[in-house]
Image (cartoon, rainbow, N blue to C red; front, top):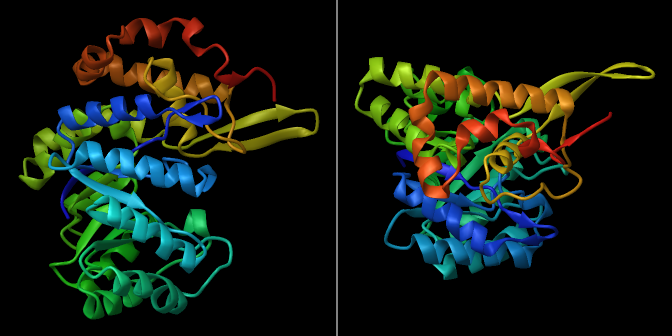
Length: 343
């Protein structure tokens, strides 16, 4: 599995899924050269989608992408029976691959993740690519490289991993265990360049957050790395870095009891910036809420830096959605209601 895939947000209108907005976002991705789309992943707020909403979103995106780009469906759970059921519906809808996040909260061992979670789904769907999603910072569990290699050996359809451990050493161990034909895909925008450039990792691409906003730019960076055009890829990665650094935003907030570290997790930053720029987005679904004022200032400063340095990167967005990017990044009125005015 190679290329740039977008971990698509789920736009909301108040408390319901904005399906017309979802279709518009998918079309924006396709016409701007993305390799494929992941629907109902973490960035798509799968933890707060009902199963009915999740399957409806998967069916909508699968229908729109069929014959054009690949579609990956997030059907992972901390309940194997739910994952099996959701996967069955996604496969019936015609998806190209399934993403299974490590089971969260109940904390299975790597052995249990392999035997009691990934393997049953892979065995039940031998004709569909099954992609484990390893992100221990979110789940509190981790499929280890050794168990991943055992899965790959026994289940040929488990030939790719979405790697979001943040550990380059873990990625190198995965490559050493799984061999040269196994696909490692970045799950971290900010590490994609290093993962693809390091021959001991040799990542094939990324499932990206900020390609929601700039699919052409992120896809071009991945393509340049695949072609070993490192000078151009380096320049593009440097232009994108301020955005990649804001998948999550950390700020220190003052309270009556002293300073508090506030961590705004994905997809809060990307959805907020998309809303500022006039794209279909809507709010995050609770318990996610809003950025702080400091968080908003950080987000806007980073986006303004990218726009000032490389305004051409925003040209496809401005044309497709008919928005004035500069005005939206500079006029405070477009931020109203999108951040907490007090802690």
